[in-house]
Image (cartoon, rainbow, N blue to C red; front, side, top):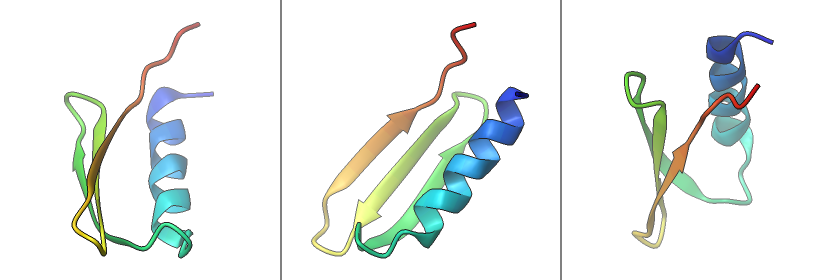
Length: 52
């Protein structure tokens, strides 16, 4: 699987999951990072890396 395709699918999945109550998703394609903000103001960072 191509890495950029995988990142696109992760973004789509995160965007569609209402249980997480995500209000904003910022992406940094150069660093392969998603920054998520939830309704309570919490901020999380997800880094994607291809291992093999």
